[in-house]
Image (tube, rainbow, N blue to C red; front, side, top):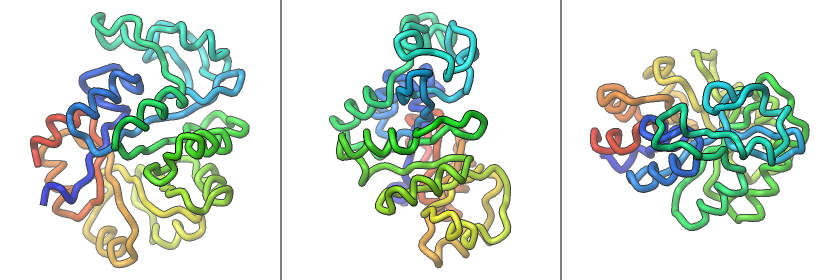
Length: 241
């Protein structure tokens, strides 16, 4: 039963390591996660980088918008110290750097495009180009809360798996998915119910729940028939199954 639920490390093992950093992804891999989830934005000079917030303030020692930093400026920021002093000096990775590392693992990958507030010109093309270069397209899902971004990816490459991100219940999301051209639903776990699961399962639509850190939540998602969960603590989540 346990093996049927795919475990994605949410921003890596972000409960134990600085989120969206290479050491966090390596920790998720070491913990036995099936995959990792990460967020992508573009620097001022158009380099895809792995960071969640549109601003660097919360996770680094810097101030300001990701889009206003040149890549060489951004990687000088400390992305570890605000989590714990023992991770001081950890940098924000480029997507290229992370993909290069992933090729040495068997991890699945979920790339979330952070295009909800900032319109990053060409981000979909850049991400697809890197995935093609590292031949990782077949084990990657591209998702976003900006469903125009998801639709854009699907129109550019119909072979890559895509998913829409949702925080709340949506009326007949299986019909909406068709209009976007997406394959799966990535949904806040409390918005999942038996009705949603019955209708998605009979249509073969994967449902992946976020962000689950408690054993009872994880077991509920498993019982409902979710395909995967996203967790900040992959090691303890795996143990709870």
